[in-house]
Image (cartoon, rainbow, N blue to C red; front, side, top):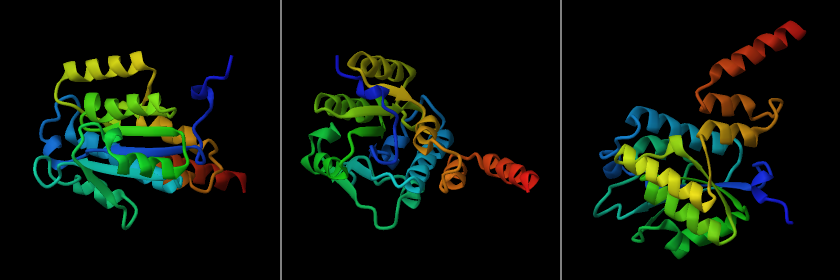
Length: 207
């Protein structure tokens, strides 16, 4: 029996991030999580991923006609000059540019977040799984339009074999070692500056 690829830990060398449709218009319909919490979480994910050197693919759908641009808080957290791919397909995985951008990362473990959870995160996660990728969905960095939709989206992904987690746990798994030079920046991005403070105090006591 071949080893389960999901048993292999996420690392800075095998993981990439796909951010789908965190758009102004779609955010107006979010009902399963507060907008402040959702923005906090997706911004923290983007900042931590940048600190860890993870490649990111960011996409919107119908930005000029239906759902508007990417939320400004996320844009500000992305690396300078980051291209956002606008598409027409409901499933981001059905856009050849998105698939090509993911393939170009050379990574097989994909952290996928989307608005809405049951469509924009679930559809590409399930499709990527069928194409031999290993998708992970941080449910607290995604959102949707009702509790029922959230429950149905989570159930469908679990049935398909997508791994569900939260954004901070995935980033800390990739960090792996608190002696990593990126640790302070990662914990700050996750809104855990107290980790850096405690570390500084401990270091001072060791001197």
